[in-house]
Image (cartoon, rainbow, N blue to C red):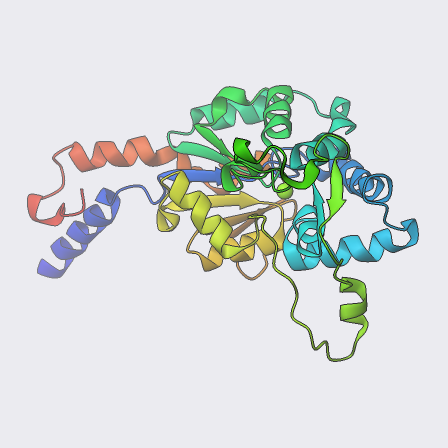
Length: 304
Ligand SMILES: [Mg+2]
């Protein structure tokens, strides 16, 4: 008899625990809209064109170089900086994003109402620049759905690397700041040659750019937005970003496939499936009602 009463109490106690998540963190590209829209493919092409046209890299090397930089540095841009290219980040972003097929994106009222009906704070976390992020959200009709955007500029606030911040230094270097948008700062590290060696001796140069999937970049983003990883669900289409997110303590949802992988707590073909897969996210209000309803014996409501 006593045993059953105790079980009932435990059940109430479980219900009285607060909602599991108090923040939802969303990647932007290929997460809030499908990969099939062609923006990712356009981006890849534009990055290659930038490398040929602006950095003077031989066209035949672009594919291998892009792969290695992306793989080792998180973004091609971060890799280009690491191996010794210097360029204006805003120019790079406007070149790479400026000619994307944005017309393929359509307003998504279904996603909009899903997001607006969620009683939890929502934040965007993208490696892209602010102009692109705002533009995509505006086209999708999701602008007011988020509390804030953590983007390239958030994690890389000082980025005019070739220009001096000190105005007194105006004559410094005789100045070519307006004559060219990119320069080589010294030797270019041969990353393709590096990985062609059976046992590479040299260490890869570091990048000054902070971006996903670096764990420290994710940690910095969480700190800036005042996010507790253990109480946050992170939606991402990139497997490695999901895995880094998991390592810093986030719960994760891989978007774009229903095949779960190591590091993903959930896997959804589309962000549109979030309600079916995660109905508990909409129950935060109900759980609060249980906590304060007075039906739970006082001594068991310690976590309320
Ligand atoms: Mg993405």
